[in-house]
Each structure stands twice: as C-alpha cells, then as structure tokens.
Image (cartoon, rainbow, N blue to C red; front, side):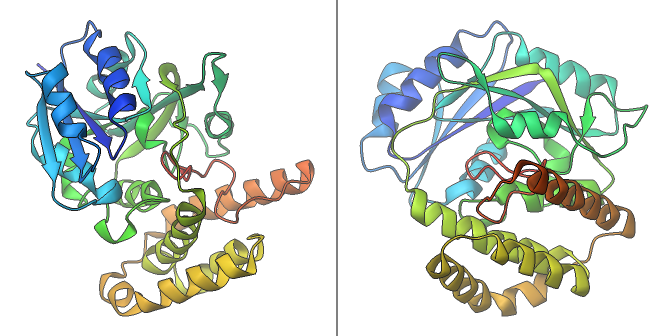
Length: 314
C-alpha cells in the first residue's frame, strides 16, 4: 500500500507554520509530517514541539534554503512526498487525490496542483499558465504535461526525487524547481499539472523580495548553463537578462553566476534532444504570450515556467 509523507519547510515564521500545521493535521488522509526548521531564530522549532509534540522536527544548524527539503525527505520512508511551505496547506482530499494519480500512472513522477491564493481563493497566475501548457498531452499521463512545478503544491515519488539528487543546495532559494523538473524529465518521469488537486496559499508578508529576485535570476542562468546545449544556453541567458528591469540586478546575478562557473562546468549534463525541444516550445509559447499581453517580467518566468518559493516552474 502506498504511503504519504509531507515535508513542511520553514524559516523564522513560527506563527505562520503553526497555522499551516493546524490545517495539515486536520487532513483525513493518513500522512507523516516532517517539519524542517531551517535555522530559525524566532523559536520556531520550540513552538512547533510545544503545540504538536508528536510531530517530527528536523532543525538545521544553517539556513539551507530550498535544499532544506532534502533533509525532510531523508527523514521519511514513504512512497510519496508532498511539499508544503509555511504559508500554504493542502486542501482536504488533495493529498489522497495526488497519491491516487501516482498509483495509477507508474511513469508519473510528480503531480502539481492548483494554487488558490488568499481568502478570496484567486487562482495563482502560475497555475493558470500551467493549465495552458503548450506541451502535447500524453495518453498515459493525467492532466497537463509540464516541465516545472510549484513546489508547495507538488507531490513526488520519493525514489525518483532521491535518484536525481533532490534540490540543488547551491541554488538556495529562487527557481530551484526548474532544475529538478528538468532532471526528473530527463530521467524518464512525467510531470503533470492537475487542477483538481488544490492547495491554499496565504502569502506571508515576511519576504526579502530583492534578494530572492537576484537569486532567482542567477539560478535561471545556472540552470541554462548546467543543462542546455551551448547555443540554447546562450540564447536563454540573453533572453533572461534582456527582460530584467534592473541593470544592478543584472550585474549582481551575472557576477555571482560567473563565480560558480567552475562548479557549473564540473556538473554540466546536457539534456536529451526531446527535453530540449520541449523547453524551446515552452519558451516560444511564453514569448508569444508576453508579446500578446504586452507584459514585462523579471526575466525568468517563461510562460508555464515559474516555481513555488521563487515562482519558477515550467
């Protein structure tokens, strides 16, 4: 019988994570919860243990960013792992629905659900983009095919996640989903957006938007350099930088990306041609949509491309 685990990542948001855990504990589906406290300084771990003494808490000595989720996955032995941010929670029935889809489709590696934002339940713009994914449907997989995901709304096969290495620690936060999605697809796993899997998101006001934006930009460059053929990596890099409003952000992102170039070259592994073709299709669709809407973005969103903490999923 398949089992479900949930990794809740938090940092310095004690009140937020307690609300999230109250919602997750009210789920009827049996699921093992692991809270990863990424070196909080506000007593988060102690508050969680006091309110929910039976929950597993992994307290990290340093803030690992998105890669803190890897520690949570390592604490679980479940068939599937759902991810949850400290300002979001899965709607009743959503965990069971995602697990049922994974049970029914052996090639499916990850399910990403629809995110509804705030008390008015607005559809997250990235969810809307994924629902209109231009990738061709696959008869053997549910939902819309994607090459990225919103982490806080996703459930993954634990063994598939571990096999591709999980979240890259060097990325910290911002676009971490993009590289993992590409690696899952390159390993032969399908990724699907399924709108009847619902996650609620109440965005926390405690965000460092400037730093996260620069990290997101750097990570988009690194992802292109790590996985794309040279010509496409160059094209993608130019496209990302050209759509970035701030010259200062451009310079900061390029400088930090170049400092990691020796690591990038050691880790570089070009994706198979069919994955590259799908990435080009997504980027072409994003460019056409942007021109049609007259939109200007931060340079890293690519149509059905944006993620959870960073809003970067394909």
